[in-house]
Image (cartoon, rainbow, N blue to C red; front, side, top):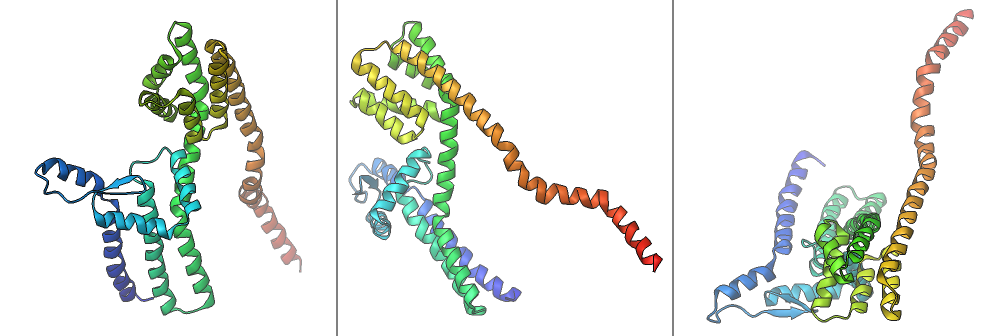
Length: 302
């Protein structure tokens, strides 16, 4: 394409993209709540609810319903699990994600259509389809990566947190008080999950359900094992200090084993970059001058 054509495409696509993103990213439910608080006389607009999520206007409820209709039910549930595993980022709830994914794919498809119309070919069509599919699943990839990092952080923090809870329990505090102390002193995702579990119990949820919900949200095997041990200790009346001591010891052993496993995998990961990137350059620097001299001598002999 020429520079003029690219300029025209940019003038059309960039404003449309900005309008779509500003339309999606605005927290309309918060704005509706502010308006309802300011207009006590009852002049505020109606508040609709869709899928258990309060939305600020009828148009927003229609957009949420449209996003749910465009997404299969099983896929929406899978996205909800990804968001729970990632800690439910405040800037991208499930409803906004369901609207943003088709919007991004639509923008990329418009760009691809303009490109294919200028240079029609089978390769261009296939590449455009690939880009549209990739742009639709890019949010999923980003959320999955964020959830994986969060799981690693929880698994790394768990042994130290259990040690803190064990010290608190041995000092005379109850298990929930020890959990609250660990949540108050911590600043990572595990502390956030502990605080949310305590909030669930404060609003009337049973301890077993709150613990199992925490394990389901985090989806970390070590945390799930700890929750099962705590639930069994609560059921059969086992001393919680012994459970915490045993679980903390096991978590430290698992953490050391994971570190040793990563250290053993490191030579295999370094092998291919070493063979294809470092060794060729090293051979060129060391053997290259000798090969050039041999070639000059060989050519001069004839």
